[in-house]
Length: 215
Image (cartoon, rainbow, N blue to C red; front, top):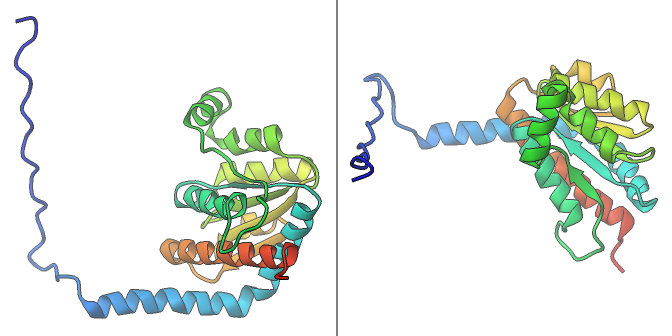
C-alpha cells in the first residue's frame, strides 16, 4: 500500500451542560421578542425623520442614475448584502432594478486588498474603485467604531459621495461623519442588528414608493 489506513471519524463529544443550567422556556422567548419589539418602537419614535430623509436621498440618487454602496463587518456585512439585494432584485413588487452593491463580498478581492493594504483599508479601496460623486455610501456598524468602516466613509466624503450610517446608540464616531445617521437606541448588538434589517426594509419600501408609485 502506498498510503496508510484512512483515519476513522471520531464520534463528536457531547456538550456538557452545567448542572445549574435551566432549559429554554417560552417565557424567555417572549421576553427576547418583546425586547426586540421595544427597541423597534423606540426607533420609530426617535428616528422616523432621519430614516425618511435617508430614503429621499437614496431615491434622488437612484433617480439620477447613481448607485448605492453598502459595507460592514460580520452581521453588518450580511445586512449590507441583504439590503443591496432588495434594490438590485425587488422588495415586494415588480419594478426596474436599482444599482446597489455590497462591498467586500468577493473573497479573492477582499483577501488581496487586506494583504496589500491592510484590513482597515479594504472598504476604502472598494469605494475608490466603485464610487463616484453623487453615489450613496451606506456604512453599517453596530458599534460605530470599526476602523475599516470609518476609513471608507472618509474616502466616500472625499470623493463626493452622499453618506448614510446605520449604527447603535454608542456609534457617535460614525454618526458624526455622515450626512444622515440612523441610530438604533440600544447598546445590545443583537437588537441593533435586528433593527438595522428593519430599517433596510423600510428604506427599500420608501424608495420604491418614491420612484415607482402605483398607477
